[in-house]
Image (tube, rainbow, N blue to C red; front, side, top):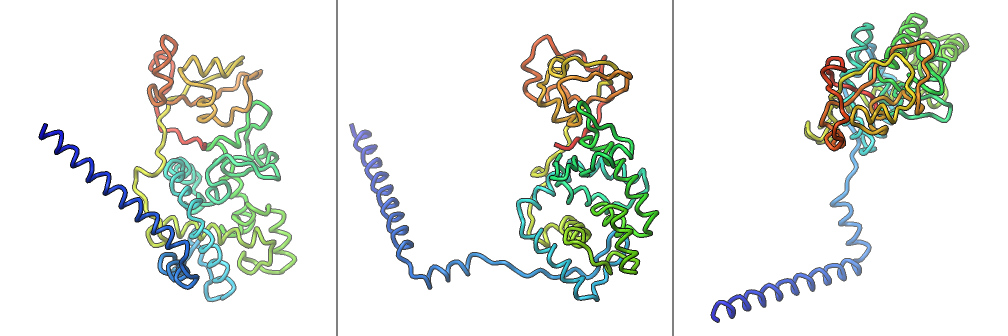
Length: 339
């Protein structure tokens, strides 16, 4: 009986405490509702701040100096640095996706002997997603159909290799190497990636100048290289610009194996099921597949990425369907297809 009385006493104390807290919250909200404008604005100023940014001492694109002694150039860079620093959600997503996809891009840039800074073109073009522009540019490198075909990509109703990270990176490398050969600088090559080689060539001739920083261009292209520079600066110095994250917060490469297909696929849905995944997951890892089937009249070989067994829960849910990966699949790798 004494224990019951004691327990009841504790219950009463708890109830009273909760009532006091509830009344306190009501009074707090009531007070804030009737705060004066001066008090409310004072709190805002104490808790919310936006700072001007210190300009870095030395900014380069592919080892080409940016002429900050020109105030107009400095202001253009400042604009992009501010825009990307204070667009926190987008810039944080840049960090997350870059951790997954940059390694694949960097390997290809190295193979083509292109500067590492070129990778930031893909970052600002698409945010490393399979975006489609109003003009019809598609994939992580935002290639137009004609340009993609010119540089060796397959683009049709069933297959669109603009969405293939590795192959589209190779096509972008070839384009940029041609632009560098034409204009003699990586900044002009980058500008040509946005405006087109013909457009940059015409403007250089009309304005009688020889470098990007002396050109008067349309707003998009005049901002383009500075946006690359700003994103590079933030990416290389995240803490300096207020971005805090841990390694585990970043998107990791998803391990896959590859299956080679060199014949007709009547149903990608059935193909996916055979490997214990859904059509959605198949397309996630192979976004260049654009239809439910593959006719493949010429017997072209395609490497299909299949996530390693057990990575997605559905693979362990399907019984008696998934084949022996060791018999049918190539050596595993970390696949970096853009989502």
